[in-house]
Length: 408
Image 1 (spheres, rainbow, N blue to C red):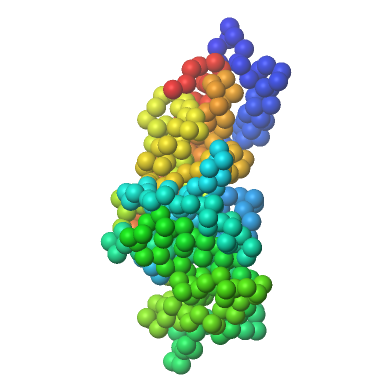
Image 2: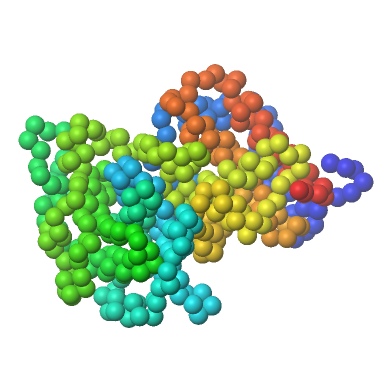
């Protein structure tokens, strides 16, 4: 620090950051080596096995709702079953902006290169609203080669439910289905009917095959029903007996193929140049996309790189071919990454964000997890160039910024 000027953070209204830095230094001043050993051990542990579903939602911290995690799990399973990428996980089916209706689902398919027809939402919505459709779709799968789109809604049940079969693994006499009979609310079915109508009008050349997935909230059993021929008249009651629709496939079929249910936890084998595009596009994946983008800009820079939200959103959309509505950006950046301490809003340079040291660590570890073919065997020393050095460098850049140095 220069002796002839005080750091900007020393101003009374911003002194909290300086105090936090001082407290961290005082707490570990005589234990830096122990801290490095602990970080190196955590690094080794993170890379000690194949990356699975459970590695990625952890970035959401304690703020993720169980329903959000179950939806992500449903999208993860469906990617394995369909062999397609899960877009629009948890996205709204219909939005209203500037008094104009639209659909992120239509925008997503258009992002992949198809030109949509005009959808008259005012004519469709009043027909479905009395049936209480849920506002969000759980996942959208697009097969451009076959001109097929699969919108998906999921419902989950506890494995202890008396109507649910327990199928822990392959059996000599497997049952025909996992769920024999279950009554579900009509709202997810109404959502699928609404989505089917919208996408059929927007893309008349595509076949829309809506899917209802039942998943085990505690395990990895699943059952998928196609609701393409379902009409509103059939869901006039509040509850619907799902056995009226024969299952398309289930975890029973998965086990019949001599595959273990644990395989569903692994990263799906979907062709993609950027391996982040093999993950369902949910809040955890989008958050990692942001960290990966910021790290790509920051890793070779000698100043703190600050990027505003519109630029981040535009880059993520272009790099990963995803639609990125404003409400999702706020949840990803403010509620996840900033709250978790992975990015920090700069105080003196507009409303941009920059990677925090913990964000650097997450980006580096995530890249290793996605790019390695299997468990990574490494020495303690490997953490120094790959993780510890980038963390220290980012901390110095933040200190320089708070001392008054400019940013990129």
